[in-house]
Length: 406
Image (cartoon, rainbow, N blue to C red):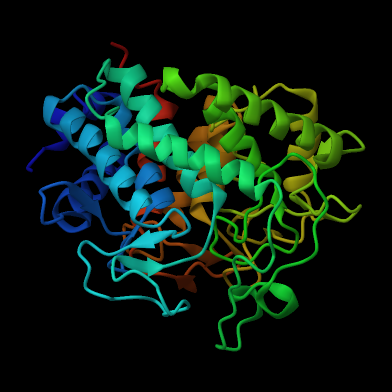
């Protein structure tokens, strides 16, 4: 597939400075020439960047700005990517990342019966929500429904079945222990994860950072899953989805909303993890996910916490300030989080300032990285991270109000 940036986003070049358009063009061309691959059946496969595997979550956010295009080839790509996500989900609903074919490649073989399709088998609730999100957005933006086929219905039914099961998580049913010396690469309590009480929320073993949850009820992921269940495009399953969504909502309200703001994780036994992580879904990203309006009182109080030194992963330095992650070194902030902070501000001036910061902290590479040091942007992680590049593109589009409406 060959698409020029001018054909994908007509009129954008006239709306933004030349240097910014060049960056957008470089990111888009890299997406189509380096990131986009095909599986044997012809369905698209998106590698995450310098790791040649497709994450269900990452692939959704990699194409997020393309939802603003009306190019027929792009629309077909999005329809077919939704089919790819469903296909991979059905191979293993507890996996987060996949191979383009059953070649057995993996980050680490953590299960004796791990499918040769599975690159990594970390159960992350946001993977499910990301599949639902893309399917819904394609229908809403382009009035296309050919991806909402029997496989999609099967996937949604399985999500609902497993979601109900994971409301009462069996700690012996999914054990993840990786002997690599990295504590957050394994679940605590000898791979079982921390004890849980019933809340109505759905268990998640890992965060969108691929780091283990401290407590099993991850609030941003439950929010995201709940929101997509409420907007589900599967009429035969809507009543079951609505019931599960309301149970999750009640659980968030009862256990996750504490003193007027949302915790990051809870266990249903009185413990809470007070932090936020750069990866989406995050507490900061809730309006970006269409979960809560940006002016929601609880969100604003949570946002104030997230963007302060009270959040252990908020870092401030001479070059930038923003949210980082346990996944990357201390004092490293993520361009994704800087972009999301601006995208959830509804302030064009803040969006422009965020773009200037991102462009000034790329270590002269012309690309967004996974993270960089707030005092020395020459220190960064991941040379090529497609999700970060495309979130930058999304912020550029938002900064000039560029959107496609059917």
